[in-house]
Each structure stands twice: as structure tokens, then as C-alpha cells.
Amino acid sequence: MNLRKECVRFIEIDDGASLLDLHGAIQASVGFDDDHMFEFFAGRTYRNRNMVFGGDDDREASADAMGEITLAQVYPLPKSLKLYYHFDFGDDWFFEIRKGRQQAASPLPGVKYPRVVERIGRNPVQYGEYDEE
Image 1 (cartoon, one colour):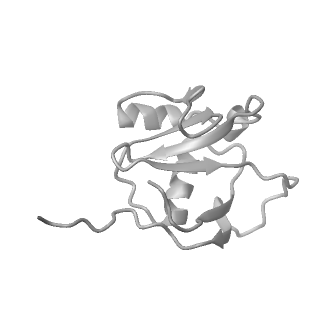
Image 2 (cartoon, rainbow, N blue to C red):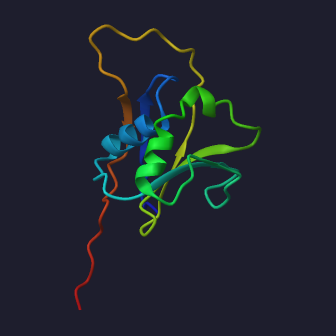
């Protein structure tokens, strides 16, 4: 799905968190319903998959596998590869994930993680309006 306006979310998440945790954080950050299959992969662009994480055609098995893969295991990625999150294989929502360059800070007491710390742009509309014929 191609957005007409920029949508960026800065999410604080522990590197011990799993890809499944990151999936949930992304879903919550853009207000999507978690009702479709998803995958994480690394490539030079979103059209190219050099590495697929927890790859499986069965959503539950795939989600289980992604629950075992931590961000610390994913990063650092091989040179020139970026991490992508692909959600809803029919509508094809692609999210490019960039790791921050800031030094990791200690978690703040009483703060629930993962958390969105900055938003640029509005949430995308998950299900656009369709013309009924």
C-alpha cells in the first residue's frame, strides 16, 4: 500500500523484545486491526528479500517462531540491508524499520514498553473505501 502522506513512528523497545512484540508495537502505533498474516524480512528494498525471519506460511507457526527471535538476534543486519515488516499480504502494507542511533537508556520506572515516543503524520487508513458496484 502506498501512502500519500508521511507516516513515521519512533518506538522505544528493548532489544530483548521479540519480532512478535515489534509486530504488536507497530500495529498499536498505527491503529491497525491485527487480523492478517505478516512477516519480517531484510533486503536492500521492500521488493527484495535477502533474509526472512520466522518464515512459514501458517500464521500461528510463523507468529510462534517470531516470538522466539529477538531484536538483538536480528541486529546488526548485514551491510546495506534494511529490516521490513510486511502486513496483510492482500493489501501489502510494508513498513521500513530503522534502528535508532541513540545510546540505549535504562528503562524508566513505571513506564510501559514498547512505547511510541514521537509521531510524524497521521495513521494510515487500514481499509480504504471501496466502490460498491
